[in-house]
Amino acid sequence: MNSSPQPNIADYIRIRVAAMVPNKSTTFDLYVLINNKFIKYLHAGDTLDQSKIAKLASHKADVFYIEIKNKAEFKKYIHEQVTDSNISSAEKALLLKESSYALVEELFENPDVGKALNDAKEVIGNFIDFIDKEDDAVANLISLSSHDFYTYNHSLDVSIYSLGLGKIMGFEGKELEELGRGSLFHDIGKRMVNPAIICKDGPLNDEEWAEMQQHPLWGLKILNDIPNITEAIKACAFEHHENFLGNGYPQGLDGEDIHPMARIIAITDCYDALTTQRSYNEPMSPQVALEFMKDKLGKKFDPDMLKAMHSVLFQLKAS
Image 1 (tube, rainbow, N blue to C red):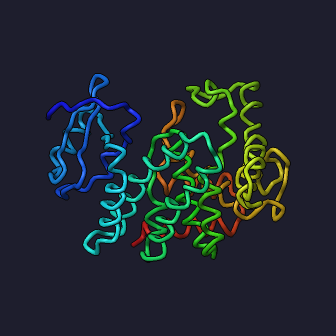
Image 2: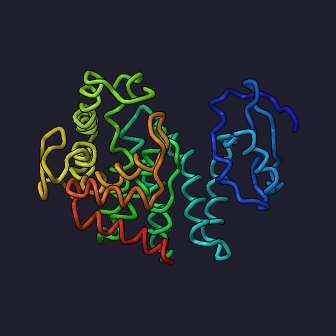
């Protein structure tokens, strides 16, 4: 590995190791960050074999860096893999998801929420194209759980699962894109929550919980200040903690009074929480999580939507 001149960290974007296909040559250099220095790990044109990936995993290294000027090359690389007929739908689903984390992180770092929402169309469009072209894309996307919880991970995971469930429920075109963007930014109100509460290891106390429950209201306030944001996208942020029993928040809406997109996010948000690692609970497997939601929490959710998500995952398991 060779040292290289050290540009500003803003000249790099972080990508996941899992977004790289073994034995597939790249058109961009890969870097690792060691002692606050970027070290070139792989030259453009070289390949990353499975042994190198395993070695990185053994050192708990799960990210590379690429120069931001090569972002278009990275997107092209991913597109070629996702459209490769020799790669299975399950592999494509994982690759598309893993490669999108870097793009979503960049969106969330943007202080201009309106621009981030507009730029999110590309990420959401990639997933919609994949769902449209692959027969079992929805099942494969829903079956993926990252098992780690960070703001970017959670938001992207909820968006992916929401697109999958929305497609099953008949959402198409502009409506599906709205659902994708709305679910990606469903927790935008958490920007106004004390970071110490967001990052707390362990359950929240009553005062912290009261502040956390304000995030749907703050999300609506943020979106209300952005021109041309649809009511559906606003509902994703404002109503995703309402439930069919009427004891959700902040409005206590019940049943059909909850926007359909918010009903979808209520399910996918809960599912992601159950299947990701937190300091105070172990993640459930996708199958166990959906069984738990069906048996213990079922009355909180739209029954048709919960049944649809449950059935598609278990069809995958049976296949």
